[in-house]
Length: 338
Ligand code: NAD
Image 1 (cartoon, protein in one colour):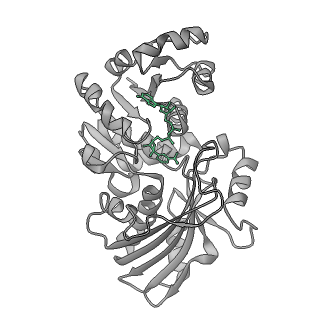
Image 2 (cartoon, rainbow, N blue to C red):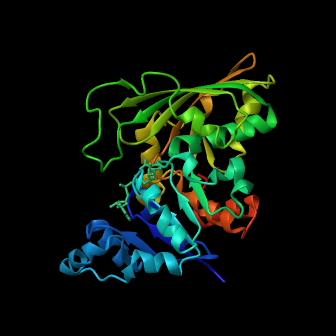
Image 3 (cartoon, rainbow, N blue to C red):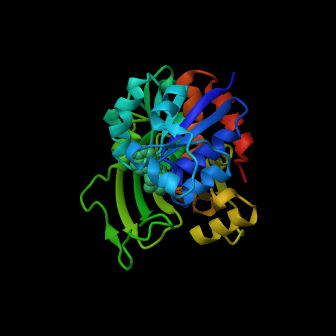
């Protein structure tokens, strides 16, 4: 029996998660919840995804726009084995009582507070913690990228202290109202940025300080990483370790990939849907050791790295596969790994 999955909130993250769910042999997408009859609502219909009105008063708007609805979001939640909430930050918290009313386990996104849920989730970091939980939060794009990097370092060498500067895109490409347009903002100005504490929701014991900036870019985030290890491997060993992970892409030296623009071009040339880059992109050449200090740069595609994590979180929460099986199945079906 396939797991019946509903996706509530069909925007940047929700539409990608919905597509990824349809690729899974053990899952069925039973519908998506939408507030407005916009171009994304039309896309859901074009894809054959049953569309449910998230706000009852707006049912007429869909009818006026000629968009057929399958029902209301309550009906969708009731019919689902699990709901992936991909609504804007804070709306997930408002929806929690709806999921509880129908006793449907729910996955939320990184914009929600950690204390909303039973556990935060990263497939490589803490897959098992979600087993049997009713409310699970798939951590943000940046925290996902950091968790994938820190997990193998911690397991293999031990992490004494991580210090990360996150150069964050101002907004996603379609977010015309976000910024800055022409500035470089320390954000937040005080330490720590929320990312360090957020990493601690996955790895409670890791000592990590994070600083954030926001810049006029939309394509990807870039992390400048320094991790003091409890061992002194050479840079080649670390490179090999990171290359051996399934959701990290070690950008080869000499590839001509010098930034986020070239990474996206690389993804487009390889026919990635929406030019998505699900993997952490680590510049192999940047991986350096100074004593026990590791340095590297990585780029994170904010719109897509959490998508396979949501798929794995469904299996982790319902206990339908273990971490290795789930990660392998998700990677294979989505085509993860350049
Ligand atoms: P988005 O605005 O692109 O999409 C959210 C969608 O939810 C929109 O289509 C909106 O109309 C819809 N919506 C609003 N209220 C709703 C309701 N009550 N019921 C159903 N649908 C509703 O937002 P997003 O970028 O996809 O972000 C979603 C979540 O994912 C947030 O928690 C965000 O922090 C997190 N996240 C975003 C990114 C990113 O870079 N975009 C990365 C990782 C995590």
